[in-house]
Length: 95
Image 1 (cartoon, rainbow, N blue to C red):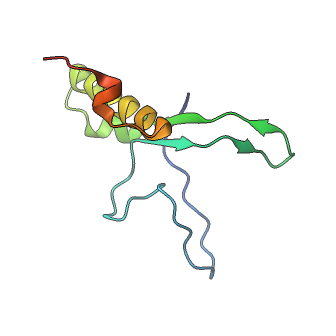
Image 2 (cartoon, rainbow, N blue to C red):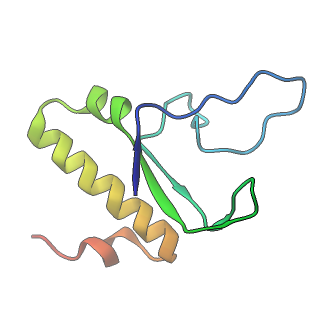
């Protein structure tokens, strides 16, 4: 897991936009992102990781308790997406 202040904004080019979750289709900035395993620019193998975006999370949270809930929800959603299961499978029944 990693924490960045904000998502990277792609450099302006004449190329068509790449399908990326750095900015959601509705114009909202994401709270987290799953970076799949692969290779870095030097050819070294990398592990999958979840990147949380600190400023968007803090901006959407009403208070510390809300921030903790938001972090939990984002982590559950990202782990579920990585594993290909429903978020309820990860979160379990809390009722």
